[in-house]
Length: 71
Image 1 (cartoon, rainbow, N blue to C red):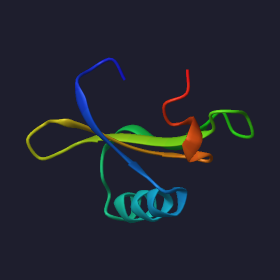
Image 2 (cartoon, rainbow, N blue to C red):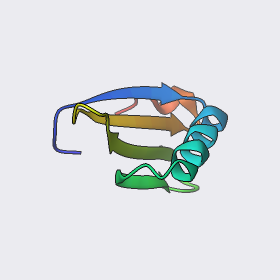
Image 3 (cartoon, helix red, strand yellow):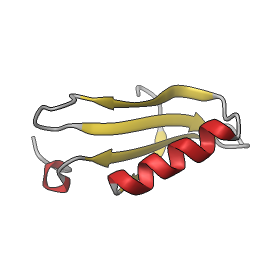
């Protein structure tokens, strides 16, 4: 996302639970929850939305947490 944002990395289970809860709550996502690079090295789940003050938030999870800082 090409804007300044705060991010948090969750486990895949925590990410899915949060995505489900936020979708049920009707959150207006900037980037809908989805999995990128499915089945590939670097597989990751991500979602972006704005907090009440307009700050961009990213919640992300990796299929393999060792790829978190991989280049």
